[in-house]
Length: 203
Image 1: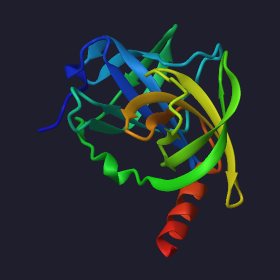
Image 2: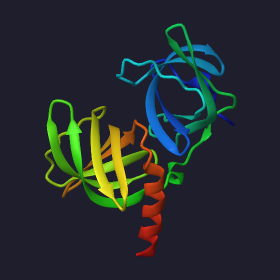
Image 3: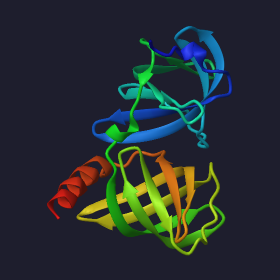
């Protein structure tokens, strides 16, 4: 049995996976108002002043409830009505195993920037099309969930300029690992993950 969009409570967070021409972006949003069984108005987790247009892109919608396996709706549509963003889905949500989003080991130094803190270097632990993680061996970053950061690094002929929002914090004995959702478009990301996966398998 599928999960209906109308079953998500107002105020709950959803994740939008947006893709176009091999470019991928992850964007958070919140349910603002239920309009119909398959239509809701949403508030985007987006700080820019420019109004976003969602023409000619593919949109998947993910919802996670109480750390359970998330539900996903494929081929959704976002339109604007007056000042509102309106999200429409055309099927019920199905369970989504995130393991399908292949994560590759990176272990590469990157330049890290966060508003109000300047620039420093961090270690990128791994990366996928939807997110990346930072290994903080000195436990000095002190990030919190919801913090937005930027990282930049070059590897195997690719230039990765990523913006991410912290969604997971894992305290280990020897390090703190921060998991981030990617929230911008990066043209080299898809190619980089594919090449890195092949190289890692060849080792």
